[in-house]
Image: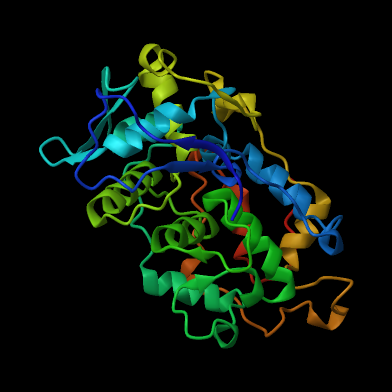
Length: 334
């Protein structure tokens, strides 16, 4: 278990915990605050670092991982400790500033804070069965999962997809250990990124937190403090920056998040990254060229080859085109 960057234990009489509040104290871990781009040495220089840089420039990616330069964990912990679900207006309410300020979060506020793209209509999220089928096609090996039914990461992937998928998982949920699991919602996010679906990610993240609160399954560490801090910073800044305690200094992944119109930015893909995506199973130090068609000849279904460019408003239009292509050809540079 990683050491805590911050431990929260409420001593203020103003702070009234919600009925389903987690046991105290609450911890904030390093992996909950910043993105860890570590790549195993054997896989460095093969294009995965370019892939991570590409994800760092995607709107969904850096919106989740970026935080204001000063992150106030005490505020996030207090909100999580006092958070309840308001059924009437479909919002999550809680307090910050030692109970002095009430705040609320809705799916719309979350989408606005994360600068997520808006589509009419949104795509339906992939079913859990579809997610499992996709991971099977990516090389998921159930024989290594033992009796555990959840999707487990690195030790269950073939060499090429192993760290490619690991990078996606870390971008979405900051999963990094071999025993980490993908929740149903994380599976949906990863599969939607691969399929380039125009998903309402704001609603997906919001209802995930609602389910967490209702099910009373809190961990002893605060989930998703990055986007909670972004919501506070954008919509509750005076309250968020007052009575905040000591901040944690966090590097910003991309300043483009705070530009007026990030859609004008052209995202480039390096040739090295194209080669990695075109032949994801090939790891030169571990395999040979005969595997170019895929480790087991598995490909994603033609029916799932959605490429919603939609005038460039999707956060990663080129990504799913390369990932789900079964032609074996490397597309020309954009």
